Image (cartoon, rainbow, N blue to C red; front, side, top):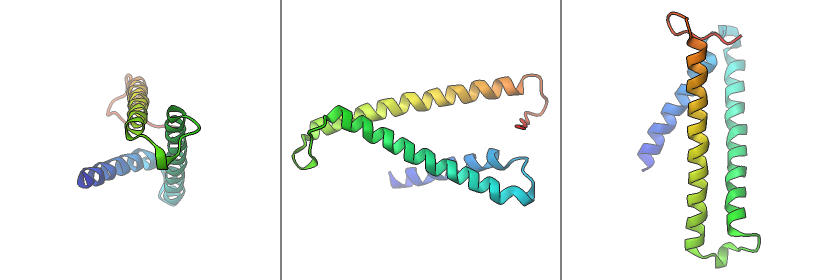
Length: 114
């Protein structure tokens, strides 16, 4: 499990930096890297907050971890995984659609964002 997480994390990390730094001049590579890292950190913080809000809402406001029913916690985690899966698939669909529209009629598949 840990090996799969490490490999997939590496692949995701690399694929974020390639498009984010493509077309950026060498003088501005540091700034581009900082913007990508900042987006990664803020996005992770927002995602964690949303995940915890969903778990808290599904458990109820008077739940305490010490007396929590494991089945109830598992159900809440399944809800979070379902919501995360739907959001991820939506993001993939939007990205693919945007890339197809941007590539329309262009040779070589190079997309310039200016």
